[in-house]
Length: 157
Picture 1 (tube, rainbow, N blue to C red):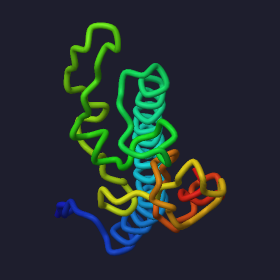
Picture 2: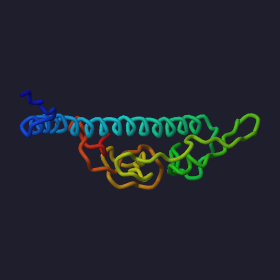
Picture 3: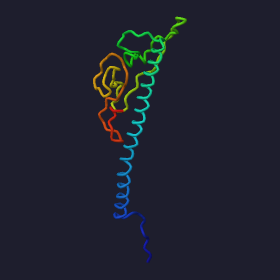
Picture 4: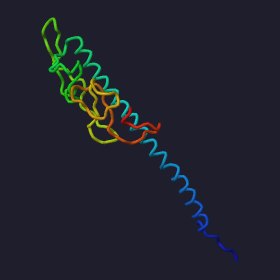
């Protein structure tokens, strides 16, 4: 009399396999979250750099006399981020010809707050001011109060 052995997994084998899968998931989920945060940090760095470059370009053209300032308090800086996105008339002082120039295609969205609202500082404000003096836009920063992977706060970048 031959008995055929049924193929399949025993309860112990199923529990062992489930245990291994749980350990692997407990490692994978934090790594996925960390990777997502790292990706959003890189996006924030790029957006801040892009806006700061646009402000610097505006300032240079203003100092060269190619952008007419509306207010003395501007000190060569834009009045708002919207002005950088909507564009300003840039002209050659010698020929008198002007053209509309946009410094930003649009105001970027902060990857941590999910809005296009940014903290602004005027040239007249302290370097760590949290309220904007409204004279001009000298610098931008994130409004997020979250800590970065390196331990600093995004608002301090």
